[in-house]
Length: 72
Image 1: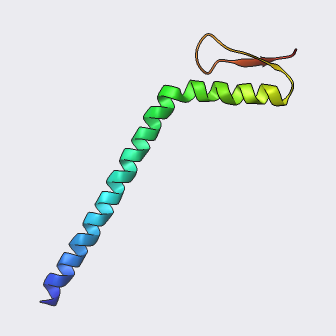
Image 2: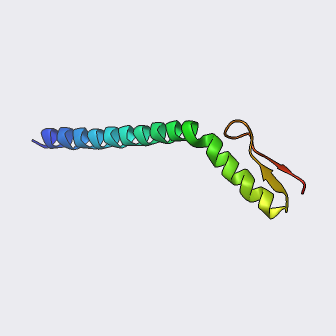
Image 3: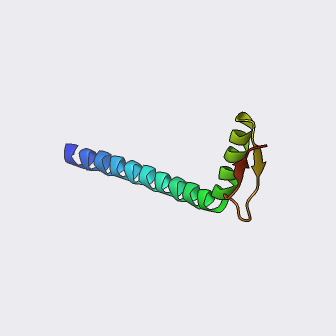
């Protein structure tokens, strides 16, 4: 009787672990896809804020992620 209970507990723990791994994997893949799609725009926003902090002018590039700071 105890063996069956132990098997069920081990099976439940394994299922819970598997669910957690699947959820983490899906979240990670979603994060990477979004980063790939919007990464250049995020980089441009960070560069723009940095330009303002160092009193330079932000000049957008031809493609997302290629903006630069130039002296005023």
